[in-house]
Image 1 (cartoon, rainbow, N blue to C red):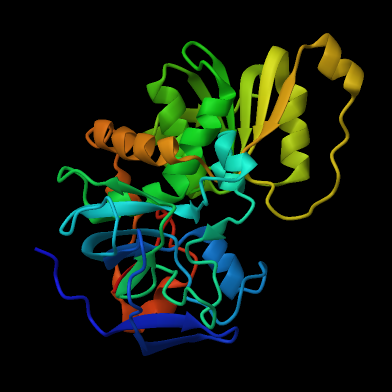
Image 2: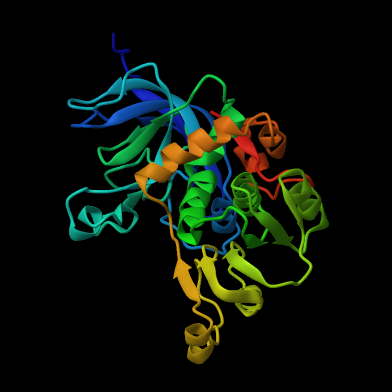
Length: 337
């Protein structure tokens, strides 16, 4: 039996100069829409960049795109059940345009994004820093097994799912020599994913605390030797150039961190040809990657200390405490709306 959705809910509205927690109306659900009561939201680095002024975003808006919650109401024709604990995709796709039909729904011609929409537009409750979030038709929703805690499940909606897309782009990893640039939440998840697949994983990060974490997730410090696969999550042109220079014959470079303009990268076409190199990029992910992320975290929950990476959550009214860089040894702060 469907629950009666609330008429108003609490939301943390980013105003450009701070966060204003206010009561806002809950809209009537349209065809395929789903209303979720947010249990816990983790703070992605991109949101930190927004509040620090290093990344542009609609303003005002409700930020937040890594979260887990319970379905409390559904619109007509929705295929999600009330009562399910779920996570959801960052992107919302139309499913009909040429890109969606070709398997690139992350680049849908009319894509919308959770936690990236204007508060004064037609999707005010788009972000997870709120007691409730509206998930429009076209959002991928994945059920969360009881074996995963909220703190482990929430980052799957962005960090882990994106990693699933990058390791897929990297190809077969068993027995491969892999270099991971950056040991933040994405990089550390990639270290674990590659190690679980049977790769020898080297890691580069300037932060000693993150390098220590990398050893707990199956990686080791880089020794500068040639590699078969390099995955960059830093977005640093210098780091990318170094990774490219370390690729052995037939090597693959996957770029995932270069999401803002930076210095151009010099690529020698002759080297690419003679060394049979592959250079590819990944931005966001496809629906299958969200489901793969949940499965991966569930299968590795006893092997890697995922929950230890998340700071104890603060209530929504104290969200400004969470919109800060995590302390040493942690990779995510969190909010419980």
